[in-house]
Length: 367
Ligand code: KG4
Ligand code: ZN
Image (cartoon, rainbow, N blue to C red; front, side, top):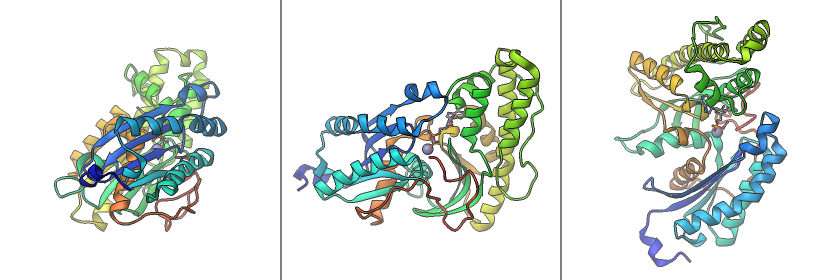
């Protein structure tokens, strides 16, 4: 039975994120308070391989998850029966890690008879802005346009409600974060690449190298980054070893980032037009996912929002990259609607937010 004091508190959900290389755990309440949070990066384990190794990731989640859960519960002075629900990322992502988080959530839910919430990782990213701003008329109401740019995803979506998404565009090949990571690798900048490329680009000349602007001017809202990646590789090969040292390394990063920014703006501008046709009264553009932590891209998107009369909403960087708070929050949103899950719910390596949208290569593979 829940302790008596807890009956006067807003509902609290435990969120567990293990879809990729961060073990994230958080306790969040329905009044948008983070009661306790823990986040453990596995970067040091994957860095020698230049990317996330699924088996290493799953083992690292197993080692640490119980400890992190115990720590946040103690910090918030809560017992499992106090929880209104237990939420875990059930997909998309690396299946080993997903299984670790989901099975742990199922064990807590089953042992303490608490509702289970199997969360789509992308829904976690998509709803974070409502956690930041609130869900009422003063905050962020549905529908809104979402640009989701992470290590595994690059999509433009109309977010029409919890569990209700319409995909307007997706990547035909690499996700944007993946493109940043590959660019960094080619330039000898280590892993993860996004922050390293952004840092180096600050010192560079974005006009130094004319890299292609993928998909710019083409119909639709899809993305493609493989051509840009190839062009960057060819430029690096042409320049030889000096490409991997300043100042050319910085110029290459700045030129790459400039090409990416132009592609993002072009695609998002088109999606905004589509979204306006679908939802004439709505004006919010939300950016989510790890790449939204990039200050240069944020500034460019702010310019686009001003030009288009859109309200730009970008969660703080720590909520853009993977974390347990976003999963707990998505759990609270679903719980409020009675959208709980059966203990038999499976983990899903692939799990598109908009099942009606045609699958595209590169989409839905990673978290
Ligand atoms: O959302 P996230 O933490 O994990 C996934 O769900 O994929 O995103 C991680 C991705 C990585 O590819 C990383 O390089 C990229 O986000 N990223 C950035 C920046 N910070 C993280 N990309 C560009 N600029 C950044 N500052
Ligand atoms: Zn993510």
